[in-house]
Length: 241
Image 1 (cartoon, one colour):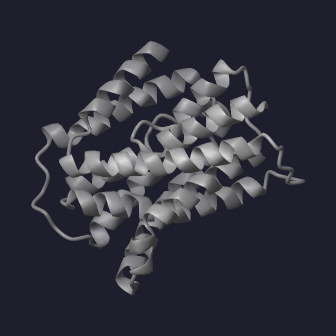
Image 2: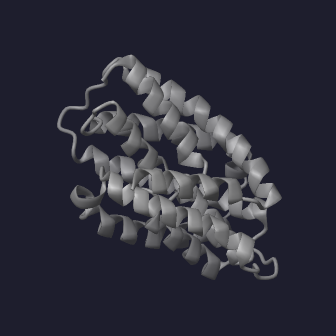
């Protein structure tokens, strides 16, 4: 992998990890463009660490104020995420890396993003056990390439009655345990952890583009309009079919 390839893949990861368009699907497209059959596991770990660091920095004020009740809700969301993540992990050889599968799920993701526009959300309520579990299930299903983690969890939060700001915050707070778990599982597949110098370009690109994407998404979610991302996913999915 060249430094330029790592830089582009890092930009793709940072932007699409947080914007509701699925980072996995876009990485599949980018890797196919560069004729990379599969990015090294170490590089994948580096990119996840970059986006995790970006999340911590942007949400530091929220993280500092975490209380026992919020921890309980995070745990409730993480349990179904972990179960679904382990379940779909056994399918990775069949679905991960497949352009056709990513195309189909991108179309599904576009339809998911349209739900808040056509379904009347419940009256605004606070975060509770029920919607924490629902959002955790949405995050678990987003393991599938093409299904956006941020998009599915924010939509689940909005439809369950959360205010846009709360749905946005909780979506990314629960991403941290998921990222840590994904990194730990990936480490099991690494015998000798070797960092290629080109990976640094990917880390820097993913980190800064991730911070930018988080700030952009916050403004968009506050307006409650995910339709532009839905249209983008629908068009890209149909083009990839």
